[in-house]
Length: 146
Image 1: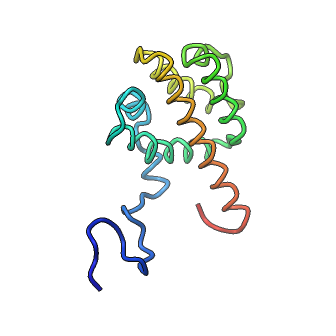
Image 2 (image 1 turned 135 degrees about the horizontal axis):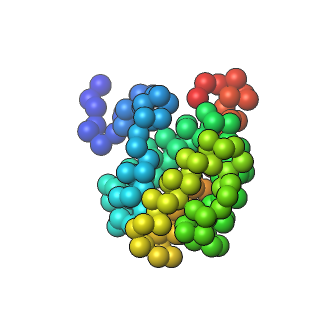
């Protein structure tokens, strides 16, 4: 079968591009992805943030027992008050380890001087993270692996 270079053949169930394991995703430096992706124009950096970066954040937060609704609520808080305001929250997520980690991510965004655009991008990214966590949890509940 001839393989098209733009993606997998229609009857080939191999992921494209090759997938990363949760352990590989968990080792990504999310602060770097945020630093270069939040204020980037659409392109490779933004794609990395919303692709592997969102998946990596979801893996990490899921492993810390974070509920997707908590991340979604934080996304709404960022959209309403901005990254700087959210970074000042004493507990941006319910669990201490998750709160400290997310506070670091939020502070990364505050140093970019991206204004409302960066705030909105961060809120959208956090919503994507929440969605991935929810999908992971639903898959596990149905007996699948994540």
